[in-house]
Image 1: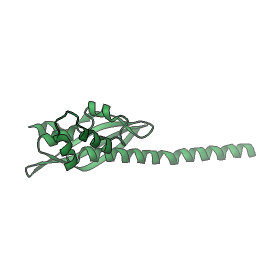
Image 2: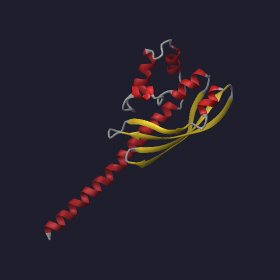
Image 3: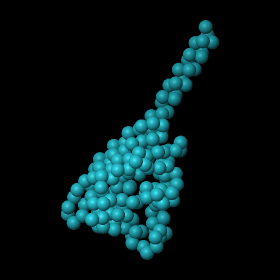
Image 4: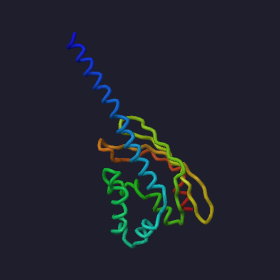
Amino acid sequence: MKKIMGITILASVIVLAAGCSSPKESDESVKTIQTFLEKEFTGPNDELSYALEQDDAFPPELEEYVQENYKPLVMNWEDMINTNHILLFQRVAYENGYQLKPTNIDIQKDQDQAYDYEVEVEYRKDGQTDTATITARMNLNDDGKIVTIRNMNDDGLLEKMEQ
């Protein structure tokens, strides 16, 4: 009887511990995604504008900006740059005189380390403001770093800024 009771208590503690650790992990992942989306859809600020003004395709100033702002959030910032998952919207906004600002961010955990997000982005130029809603799915690794972004729908934002 004592053995069964001990096993039951141990099993309960394990289930309780697992239940408690999961939301914390999820909260950290949501915080990482939130931070990434705020960085990706706010600006460009003066520091980024200066880095984008440089003549090289990927000048040291831009690398420093990416390492400072994105490296803590993503598994491989170089891959993310090469696949246009970092600074794509910021670069197009800069090149066409727009300012971006997220007005609403919604992040939903779908499974394991997969999250769906929706960002309402305000884009402004010459006193005119409009909004677009960007949706996508983001995957994180076990360390809580962003691995990839997929199934992105930008609601025509890139095309609108390039007109």
